[in-house]
Length: 298
Image 1 (cartoon, one colour):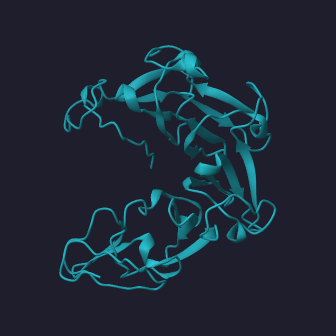
Image 2: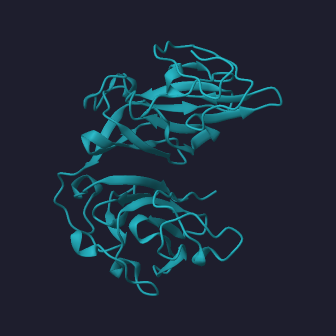
Image 3: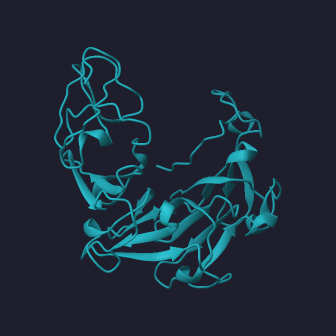
C-alpha cells in the first residue's frame, strides 16, 4: 500500500482496511467526507462492511462504485460491478451489503438478497417505501428487493415478448442502462440499444414507452417539438425525473440531453450535438456535452 502519494492501491484487500490520506486521493474513489485534515474516500477495495469514515484506498480498474444515488432514508445506494454486490451507505457512516454474495452468477430469487448471486450489478434506485430496484447487467435482468423481507426477485429480462401496455415481466428489453423513479413510484427504464425509455406503473405492472421509437427503427435524431414517442434517439445512457414530472434523457451519440415535459412533448434541453465539454456560463442548449454523460435530478 502506498504512502504519501496521490494514489493508494491495495493489491490484497481485506475487510476493514483503514488508511488516512493527508494528500489528494485518486478521483476514482467515492468521496464520503471532507475535513480540514483529510480527504476521506470509500472504495470497493476496502471491503464491504463496517464504518466507512477514514476508509481511503484507490480502487483498481472496474471497482469504482456504479452510479451512486441517494435514496430511501437518506442512504446512498451503489453497486460494485466487480464485487457483484449492492450496498447502502447510511447517514451514520455504515456500509451495508444489501444484495449479493460476492460471487458472480445468477441465483437466489425468492430468498434473501444477501444470499443471491449477481453478475455485474448496475444502477440502483429506491421507491418511497424502501423497495430497491437494480439492474443485474450480465444476467440481463432487472431485480427487486422487498424492504420488509429482504427477499430478491427478478421482475424483468431480455426474453420478454410483450408489446405496449403489457406487464413489466413480459416486456422485451435489449439493454437496460439506467433507472429512475418518480414521486408516484413509477419506474423509468432506459434501454440503451432499443433507443427508448419505458415507464412501468409498479402498482399494476403496466408498462409503456414514453420516449423514443422502440427497436432499431428508433435510431437517429428527430422529433424535437413533437410527441416523445415519435422521437428518435441514439444510445440512451441515463434517465431522470424531477418533482414536476419532467423527464430528462441522456442521448449519448447525439450529444444532447433531451427533455420530455408533462404533456409528453420532447425537446433538446442541453447540448448542440457535438460531443465535447464546453459552454459553462452560456445557454445549456448551446453547450457541448461529453459522450459519457448522465442526468441527475435533485
